[in-house]
Length: 250
Figure 1 (cartoon, one colour):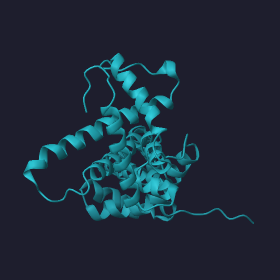
Figure 2 (cartoon, helix red, strand yellow; figure 1 turned 30 degrees about the vertical axis):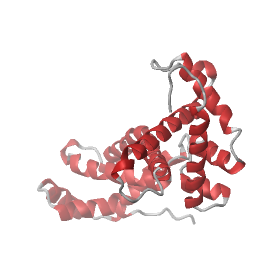
Figure 3 (cartoon, one colour; figure 1 turned 45 degrees about the horizontal axis):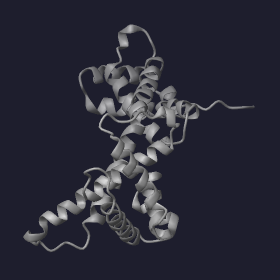
């Protein structure tokens, strides 16, 4: 005979549960923790149901479960035992809502964190080998970093354009004809780089991978990827300096 699994909240004695909810009303943290422990499997079931209908695989189940746990605690804090509804009915909507509401912004936060890692990699790469403090070269170092980051911004925007339909990309308000020419020329210059340098630039800027991910793809160390990145930007900066694009100077 097929046996139906009994969950923790279903095993809870009604009088014990009533006591826990009464204690929770008095802000008893132990009662709150006990209720969370008992109903955690229920939160996991809701998370699994939402996860099974996920539109993509960018967020792992562990993140769904974390959001479900937050929703569970919120439901425990807000549940009113005098309204007649069972806690699982009430909690289901709170937990599901917590997951869906947070997921809307979750991938964007992940993207921002990834961008921060990439920018950190770039700055460290561009400014490597200059650990000694030399006041006479401070401006030179700052200029090198600023120019390297500016080149990177143009490369990254080119990468974003490649991922979209041409008609779907509106030119930024600050774009000028000269800047557009420079971006196109910069894209052409990538093809003239040594193979490894070109691969690093394409993976990092056009595919938006951080140095650790690029290192895995190319079977290199992260430090070697940083060196190739620095060499590539130095080469690109040198080539751009020889161009006569309006009043742009590097």
